Image: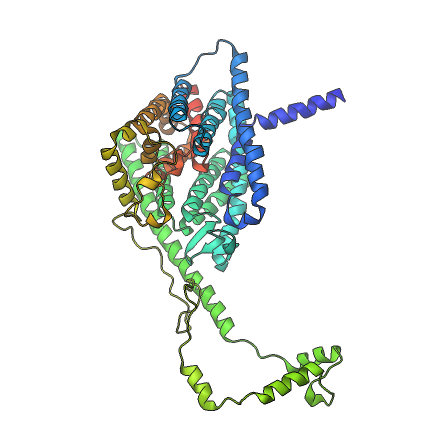
Length: 531
């Protein structure tokens, strides 16, 4: 029994101390279990987040402290020190200013877990352990890409959605053109970007042909999902990340003498990849819209031509109940006789009345707008169109940014020391398309970080980036492209590009922020090994 309890204890410790398992669990909790169609199971999904993910993350941080205590005189790295100072700035001033608010505590917990439970833990692992963690993460996210991406593509192919009434978005095709995983289409796009890059990493790391094909299929599936979400941010981030990857591969594999010539080849490859990606995404979008119209048209045709009821079937059903049709010679039921008498007592409707009713236009229900896949007044399927070109305000983003800059001019201290988490959105929404909501995200992760933690917080974050920039760039420019680390570089680039239009990439325990720091940890440690 004692030996068995020791085995169980080691297994539990291995699971609790596995950063990749925690990363995947937290990613699933934030990016899958929170989707609208799971509203029926909200208590269970909330319990998983509150009683599994939250304590698990803190347990990782405690385990990291215990390992540091056992390591004795191990050198303290500058990147971890920079993160610790940043964490102190995130916690101490805002605890004194606003107290233990929900937004504060959530932000503190997320920052501690991401900075130390994920980043510091992974960078301090042995090289062999990190490689195993990398492989496990690739396998988990590759499987998720195949399952969730395959389900989304099925919904796109059949032009349908599930659980639309259970949340703001259903799982599948919503509002005629957006492909969602039960969350906002931009969030779906960011989740798909992370899964696609991890699948590409698995393709580069796998040593077997079948494994590479499976990972390649998973990556392609998620790339198609990114395009079909109609999220411009995710689409362009994917295209530019792929272009950067092509640049690196072309430079490293070009058999041309002269570094300048190889750089030119790499730039040409990147430009071609960007063009091919943009054109390919446009063609896929057009094909998808045509498919949506085809499916909707078939549904409308089926609704318009309803087959007449089979009288023999009605007769057989009535005979089974002991009642036959009046023309069959048997007596009708009392209820049937009563219905006949009622019909006989009602005034007859003339042909002129029928024609007048047919000519009178139908009155639509007040406040109800027909969805894009419903017939129009003429009986034809509604015209589906791709998203309009980017407007001058970037879907209202520039209005929010101008309001934020105006706020900083009026109250410079908030620009310097920050306004606290969740305290800026209600002050920059006036005059924007989001004004009815009462608050809005900044839709730029860098401006959002400054709005929350001030210029001081952003400078501390830049110090951390400066401490890891050299090893990360060493991996990108000098690493082996087939080891999967190039895909991690592409994931980092895609996250940073996504941050230009969304707030999530640096948002505590958001899916993309967790993946960003996991990728940075692997790249930093791997780059330092190459020194």
